[in-house]
Amino acid sequence: MRLGIRKKRILVTGGAGFLGKFVVNKLRERGCQDIFVPRSKDYDIVKMEAVKKLYRSSRPDIVIHLAGKVGGIGANSKNPGKFFYDNLMMGVQMMDVGRQFNVDKFVALGTICCYPKHSPVPFKEDDLWIGYPEETNAPYGLAKKMLLVQSQAYRVQYGFNSIFLMPVNLYGPGDNFDPNFSHVIPALIRKCFEAINKNKKEIVIWGTGRATREFLFVEDCAEAIVLATEKYNKPDPVNIGAGFEISIKELTNLIARLAGFKGNIIWDSTKPDGQPRRCLDTSRAEREFGFKAKTDLESGLKTTIAWYKKTIS
Image 1 (tube, rainbow, N blue to C red):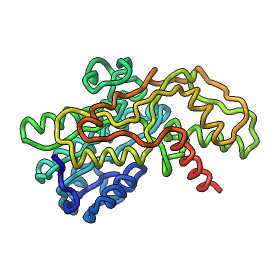
Image 2 (cartoon, rainbow, N blue to C red; image 1 turned 120 degrees about the horizontal axis):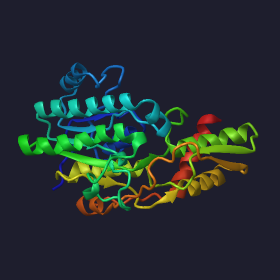
Image 3 (cartoon, rainbow, N blue to C red; image 1 turned 180 degrees about the horizontal axis):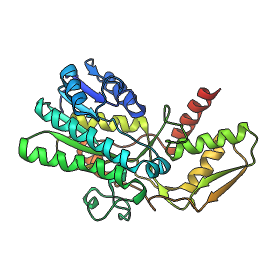
Image 4 (cartoon, rainbow, N blue to C red; image 1 turned 90 degrees about the vertical axis):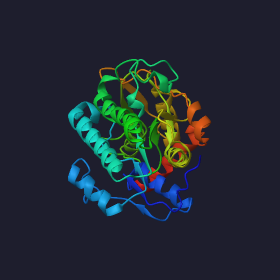
């Protein structure tokens, strides 16, 4: 059943962020005009009073909860407590107050980090509980995973329409290129361009390069979220991805070629690889609300690199 969203008041936490801007654009493309995008300086939704204030200000019919404390392996390793607490409190409070305000629908964003470290590949939603997440991002992944538990519990007890989506690693224009918090693709792009600009003959990359990852272009993810908001109303979690797997070594070589870096790539195997493999089974998203990723990796990387070059020029 399609939920008519065009005339709904929609609250998008994190709507001014990397993914959020694309989600807001997709909503506007569908004719949604009453969209509330809070700013963290006005609403620190780690705190309950700010969450209540936000709901009183926005009076939403639909909540799309994208806000989160995120980062790569380094940031997760340095800030496990903050990543756990902030993400848990934001999500749990946003959903509970949403229930009290009788919102029509709550869309909760999880993460691929919810999955156990040694999940069978491709990751299937039914395998979410077969083990503990990869250690370097387990606090973040478990904080997000609790939104699935809450979502399903609230559906049973209160009839609350909440859904839980798990995007794979995202990339694209507007990503975070800060070396202290960036994920692998923006980190690699930045390393390549810094080496080119400083005439360095080599770059050093964490790990062995053997770990595999899956990546989804940010605009494709935004489309998936809006499709799920319109069409999906079940308790089961849903993977959001592109359905392919690439090693970090292959990815690094591809980015270096597209960026024009011709030097040596040195692998620092004293640093962690993170989860050994990541690749999603995306059949549920296609079956339930018709989502299939459209942007191939090389095209998406070219777009992202072009955007980054423009920002640093």
